[in-house]
Structure formats: C-alpha cells, structure tokens
Image (tube, rainbow, N blue to C red; front, side, top):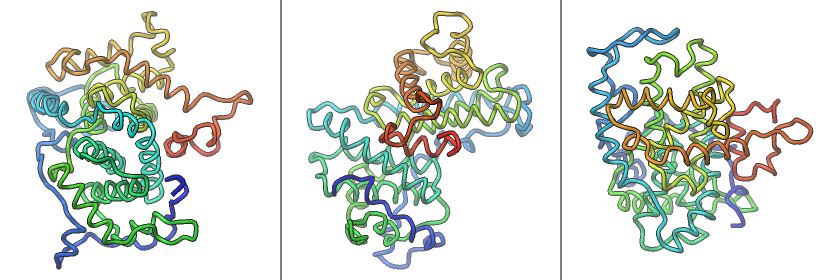
Length: 359
C-alpha cells in the first residue's frame, strides 16, 4: 500500500447503507459491538433544560433556562478524566507514528467521513479510538495494517454515533488495491474491532475536543458578547470552531494539549475570525485581545474554575492553531485558496468546510 489516500472507494458503500443492526448471531454481535458507558457525557442533551440560572435569549435559541450548577459538575468531572485519555508520544517509535503515520490515517478518516456523510462526532470518536489504541498497545501496527486499524476505528465510532449503519463488507470495500479489489476481508475487520475494543477497555464514548467544544459553545450561547447574536454570524462562528477542531486532529503538535484547551482555543479563534479581529499575532493590542479575554472569562465563570484548570497552556495552543488555520486558508499569489496539492493532508478537511468556488 503506497498511501492511505489512494485506496478510498466509496462509490458502492453509499448505495448499500443498511438499517440499524439487530444482532441475531455471534458473528453479527462481534461486528456490531457497542458500549453504553459514560452516560454522564458532555453531549448537549446531558445538560438539563431547567435550573436556577437563565441566560439572555439569543435569536434562534430555544427558550429554556441554563443550569449552571449542572454544567459545572459535568465540566469538573470531565476535566479530571481527560488527562488519562490523551495520547502523548513518549517513545521514539511512538513519536515516529505520531508525526508520520497518524496524520495520514486521520486525513484518510476525514475523507471516509465526508464521502459517507458521517457526523463530526463519529470522526472525533474514531480519532480518539486510534490514539487510545496506539497508547495502549505494545507493538505499533505495521504499514499493511494501518488502513485496517483506521477502518476498525471509524466502524466502531459510527456504530456508537450514527443511527443508520454500514455492514462489515461495506467498510472493507473502502480499502482497495490498484485493481479495485478489497485489501481486507470482513473477518479481518471483525478481529481488529475486537482487538481495538480490548485495548481501549471497551470504552468508545470518552471526552474529546469536539465534546468539550459542543458543551462550551452551548454554554456561551447564554452569555452576551461572545457568540454573535445574528443567525448567520452564529452559524459562521460554530462552523469556524468545528473547522479548527478538525484541523487540530491531524498534527501531533496538539497532542500534548488537553481536549479542553484545544476546544477553548477553537472558540477564541472562531471569535477572532468571525468578528474580523487581527488574531493572536496582534494580541498585545487591546482590541485584538478582547475575544480571548471575553471567551476565557465567560467559560471560567460558567465552569467555576480558573483558566489554569480549564485550559492550561492556552496561549501556545491558540498560536499553533492560528498558524495551522492560516496555512489552510491563506490565498495564493493570484488570490485563490491553496490548491489540494499545496494543502497536502489538510486538503480533505478544507474541502469539507470551504466552498469549491473559493478553492
């Protein structure tokens, strides 16, 4: 296999999506494994719609109260749990995997998610599974197994995050050789799924950057001055934050930062971008620094913790993410957006968020 990017074939999978799986045999059970742990997750529906503290109404926002106490309890709990879930390379072979193999796998996962129209939650869950598998394994997967591992990650993630499901044959059909023949069999995928689940202790749903981002964004909707009030700008703010979160998945430079730190950095940069500020390079100016101050102050007040607990090392994370965002969006000499060749592994992410007319 020369590269992960050359073996995507989604033409048949789109037409063969099945209904949600109801296992009736041991084989189907193995290929349909799901975990329902971590019921108190950070997903928006875990924050009750009633409470003592109601925020100002934002246009287009459902009229219900925001429970600050419940939000604080959830955030404090998940901040404690996130430390043991991050993959921080500490061995030479781990650093090699993180800098060379991992970006290719994640970029290919973005292509698969886009082609099959899977959710952002499925993508982030798949990357989380990948990182936790590599952190928990003694032997790093060889080149010819990387794509099988990627398929197992996205397959298990989609079983947990999606309603409609793909069959095992659909998944293995995405990885083909030069003759359009599958590189793996369904039994290979089922064995890899089983190994993956054993390695991550059967935990699929755990905190990740998108989970923190969703919760923080929903909380900030009830704060004045952070999320834009008009519907169009509000949508642009959310899209920009999601774009930044996906960009951060690709590179090992963001692995040392906590998920909460990355999520906060995405919100700070989204406000900078949507409101037309200069960005962190000019943060010494009061006007440019305002979004960071406003966003962080609002989040620390809502969460009931200081910035060192909520988003440690936030400043370098914001700077690194801003540089990556500039690389992904900076126009060329003719004013056009960077080409796919120039973007490299970033191209699948940019293609999901930047209209083709602008590329």
